[in-house]
Image (cartoon, rainbow, N blue to C red; front, side, top):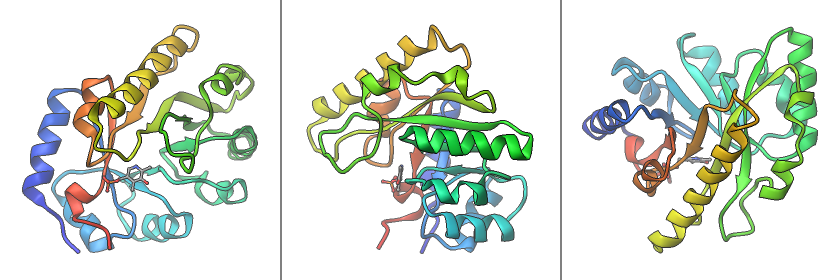
Amino acid sequence: MAFYKEKYSELKKTCDTKNVTLVAVSKIRTEADIMQAYETGQRDFGENYVQELIAKAEHLPKDIRWHFIGHLQSNKVKYIAPFIHLVHGIDNEKLLAELQKQALKLNKKINCLLQVHIAMEETKFGFSKEEIENIHIRNYSSLNICGLMGMASFSDDTQQVENEFASLAALYLHLQKNNPSFSILSMGMSGDYELAIKNGSNLIRVGSMIFGERK
Ligand SMILES: *Cc1c(COP(=O)(O)O)cnc(C)c1O
């Protein structure tokens, strides 16, 4: 396991100059790795698994902003609702309803992003663009639905990847007209964050570039 401080610092500088939020994706990484990034100043971390996230959140500094970027099951929402900073991967209405319920219980607002399926692969989660248009965002009064998240195809075809990012950015700007609370477009990972930023992303989720390849 590792923390590539120079690569991190360079990436962080790029993000800061472009007003892009950098979420360091720390799934499967040790708490020691996370602390190295923390001590360099990083505060936004992304996790994919509820159990792992809960353990880390319990042990690590309380000023870390935890992002849930994995596929979230409705029955697990209650475990992360009290402390999660932003839930990225919301891809069905049942999950929205459960988040709303837990937010009401806690008497707080939960920040969330709607995930849109933009890739060619069928295995990636997300609402279709048509489904997104039909969600009544105002019904979820205890949620702060503040934008969209998407993952491009895993492909060397940069034109394809760029088209997917551009289509998500267009949808984001379209929805923003009726939803002034929209302020986050989460797209881009280690392999494609440059294309994502070029096409309008303002939050990237980067893991392996900062912490090394996952085994
Ligand atoms: C793992 C993961 C990332 C980070 O991927 P890297 O290629 O390691 O940068 C970003 N987003 C999501 C949703 C992920 O699951």
